[in-house]
Amino acid sequence: MRIIKIWNDAPAENQISEIASAIENGDLVILPTDSVYAITCDALNIKAINQLCKLKGLNPDKNHLSIICSDISMAAEYTRIGNEVFSLMKNNTPGAFTFILPAGHQLPKAFKGRKVAGVRIPDSNVTRMVAERLGRPLLTTSIEFQDADHARETELIAETYARSGIELIVDAGDGRDEYSTIIDCSGEEPEITRQGLGELS
Image (cartoon, rainbow, N blue to C red; front, top):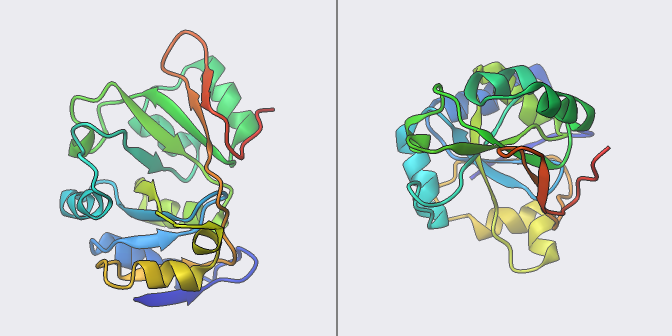
């Protein structure tokens, strides 16, 4: 497993290119977020999606799936965002939130038949920049960890996934052992269904 070290969430151009190229080639990559580190892949690459789901024991037909977008504009390409939800997202992103939104027609095949999709726009420059460089979302799922140290320390995260088939981990410093706040925006009114790190403003 390769490790790319990034200081102060300020990646160099060649680092973004290397990370984006790995994802574009179908690799699974562990990226920082503003909450728990995440396993990611190209959200439009079915082979990579199947590999990620197999690694996490997810059934893409039954489990909720989420994407990381670079900004609200990218999120709007793949989901439907009304005016009220747009204002909510504008006031709270980038941030530690997962917005459950009505699915759009451009979502990848793994979301086929889904009425909703989770969307993250994390407060992590490197991760948003990778999605921007790709020009499309990343499929995302949180790493698994046995204790707080294995969530926060990238060396321990790398040890946990050393034989998993993950090609690359981006070390942007200590992670968190708390999850994002989930806001269900698929109904008439936005509803917090899991209170995590994100505090709505």
